[in-house]
Structure formats: C-alpha cells, structure tokens
Length: 142
Image (cartoon, rainbow, N blue to C red; front, side, top):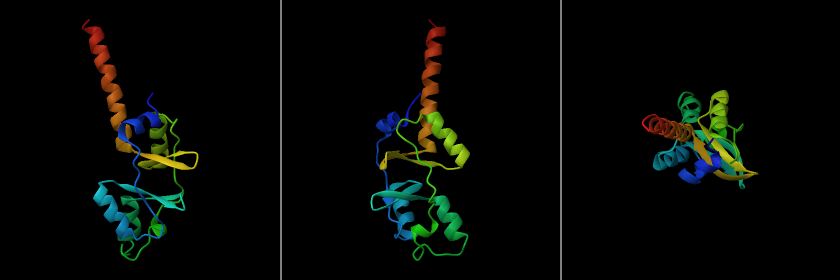
C-alpha cells in the first residue's frame, strides 16, 4: 500500500498557502495562477483552515458578496481534515469520502509538509492497478 510519504516523494511537497486576512480575490487569483483548487490557510505558522473553489462558489458568489471585500477567514473551513505522512492512500480515500473533501493537508506533528488531492490519490490507485494487471498478464503469458 502506498503511503502519503511515498506519494509526496513522487509529486513533491509544494503547498500553496494564504493568510486568513487576505481577500478572497487574492486567494482565487493565486489558485488560478498555480492551477490548483485549494489553499491552506496559515497564521503564525499554524494551519488554521483551508479555502477551496467550492468555498468561494458557495460563500461568496451565491451569497452576493464580492471577492475583493471578503476575507479568506470569513469563508474558509476551520475544521481541517488532515493526514500524517504514514497514512495510506486507501485511508485518505476513506477520509475524503466520509468528510466530503477533496484536499488533505499533510501534517508531521504541527508542521505542514504537503497536500494531497483526490486527483493525486486516484492517479496512485490507477498506477498500482496498472502494475498488478501487467504482472498478471506477464504471469499468464509466461
């Protein structure tokens, strides 16, 4: 079973963050610039939330607010579902499904060391299945 540590070793540990006092406009602009769907919200080196495109759509657009005047801290999710590097891909998938989230910050103690998305996990699972299929085909064909 692939662990988050192994997954981060393959994809990298880059995590894009934002401060809760930043505007939602700045958050959306950064997500667009980096082609990502979430930002970890950090204050004084501590993870205090996560903001995603979904938070923007539901808490700004649908409520008639404006992104230049709304703060990230006003729309972010403060109950962050996070994982440790030792978690398996399967454990992460279960957490995402049960908590209806698509991004999991990775914490080693209190230190933010990465983030995994649903896409990262699906890619890993497909890679593992492809390997198993190739091994079975090799076995069958001698």
